[in-house]
Image 1 (tube, rainbow, N blue to C red):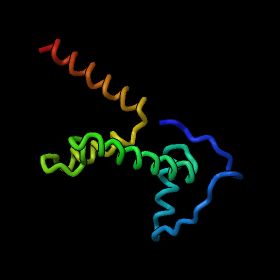
Image 2 (cartoon, one colour; image 1 turned 60 degrees about the horizontal axis):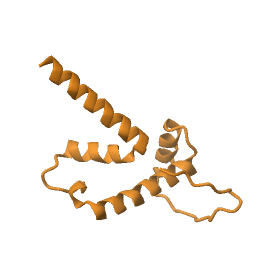
Image 3 (cartoon, helix red, strand yellow; image 1 turned 90 degrees about the vertical axis):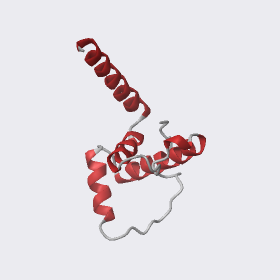
Image 4 (cartoon, rainbow, N blue to C red; image 1 turned 60 degrees about the vertical axis):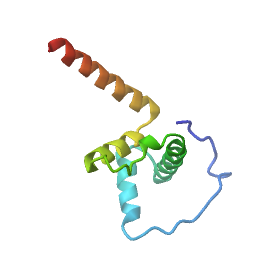
Length: 105
């Protein structure tokens, strides 16, 4: 995902009213990702918009397909939250593991 380059002095500003408790949850998540709350919110908005674009192109990847279990939906959602680099690394690891299991069988 391409990182936006902007200055906080020149960036567009928009006030958002958050439901009770959401600010604390965002702060916790941002800390766990080693980001500011602002960066966390922007990253999630970008990811959401990217997913919408991807879903328009390939409806077979839609999260609400009836044949997906709850765990599969959650896994797909978490996979989509990873950066492209992380996604590729995870896929390579899974492929490697499958090859190792095939060799042992």
